[in-house]
Amino acid sequence: MSGAAFFVTGTDTGVGKTMVSVLLLRALRARGRRALAMKPVAAGCECTHGRWRNEDVEALREAGSFPVERAVMNPYAFEPPVSPHLAAARAGVVVDFGRVRASLAQLCAQADVVVVEGAGGWLAPLGETTTMADLAVALGLPVVLVVGLRLGCLSHALLSAAAVSSSGLPLAGWVANVIDPGMALQDENIQTLRARIAAPLLGVVPYRPRAGPDAPALELEPLLACLEGSAGA
Image (cartoon, rainbow, N blue to C red; front, top):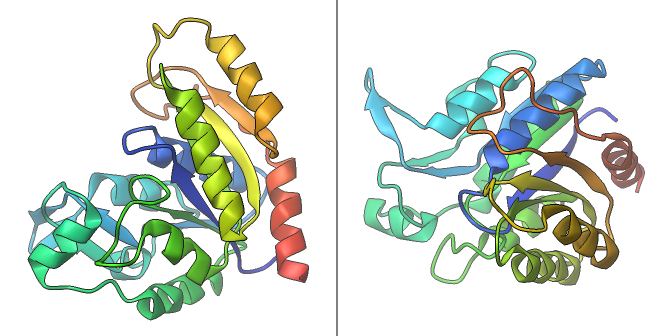
C-alpha cells in the first residue's frame, strides 16, 4: 500500500476536518503505517520568522510520522482567513493542480499513507471556475467525509455524500464529529445518516475543542480496504 492517499473533506468549514485528520494520522501510526499529511491550500496564515504559518498545517505536520517541509505539505498558504478563491485572487495566484500533484507525489514517496485535508466544504471555490472537488478529482483520491453534528447537518451530509459520489470518486467512509454538544437526538441523527450514506461510519468524535490524547480511535479497516483497492486498480 506504499504511496496510498485519501482526501478529507467536510460538510462545511469549521466541522473538524483537521481534528479528524489528526485522529486518522494517529490511528494509522498506531497500526505501524508511516503516515504524513498534506494541506494543499490554507487560508488564514500568520507570518512567523519570515514564513507563513497556519494552525491547521502545524497540527497536521506534528501528527505525522516525521516532519516534512512545509512548502511541500502546504503548497499554497494565504494570509486572510477567507474563502480560498478570494485569498488566491487577492494574492494574484492561481492554484495549480499540477503543483499540488507534484507535492503529493513527494509525500507519497516517503509514506505508506498520506492524509490530504481539503479547505472548507466539498464545493468550496478554489478559482474562477474550479472547486475543492475538482482538486480531489484531479488527485484521484478516495474521500473521507467529516460531518459536523449540529442542527441541519442531515441535509448538508447527504448533499455532500451525493456530490462526492457524482464526482466518480469513492466515498471511503465518514466521521461524525459533534460540534454542538447540546444537539437534540444526536444518536437518532447518526442512525439516520448511517441508513442513508452508502459508506461506512468510521467513528463518532464526542464534543471537544481539540484532538487530545483521550480522543476516540477511528475504525480504519474500511478505509484501509478502500486504499488497498484503489492502489491495486
